Image (cartoon, rainbow, N blue to C red; front, side, top):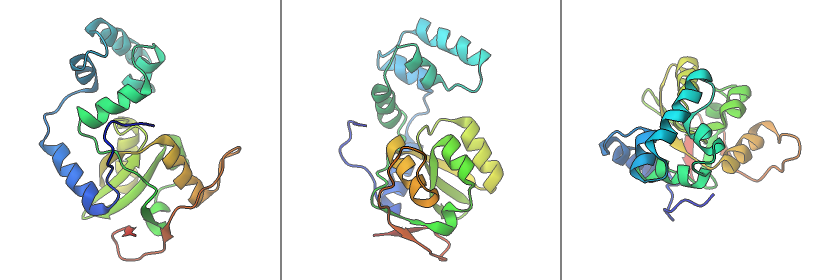
Length: 190
């Protein structure tokens, strides 16, 4: 995946700075941001929203991509630039096995996500789709934490999940730094 921004946060402190920047940005909805960027027309958004109304399992971005109105790379760029969602590189994170294991493998694979760290009552989670409200609600319900989503590439997420639970059929398992920390933070920085 190629996102316009060439630098991606790789430490807890950098992620926190990006999340603070996001909170200061004006709140836009995905459809509004795509129209603002002239990637879709209002009529296309209305059509996609009608499809979403009949199939709540599908996300708006997925519908727009399937309809051929926008590709995934442009969708990701809008999520990062216009909505201010931090895009994280997972290759340098050292994951806390105890924190990862607090979320069942089925949820990690189903929603393509991985917990990064826990701070106070807030769990920061890297996700393929940080706007997936069903995943965010499920995680909040399951963990009883407030969830702060950040974005990571689907391939990075699958690689990390494979490190902890084994590769799905036909995939390779890369080396990902891991620690068995009991410090309560859930993240060790290299």
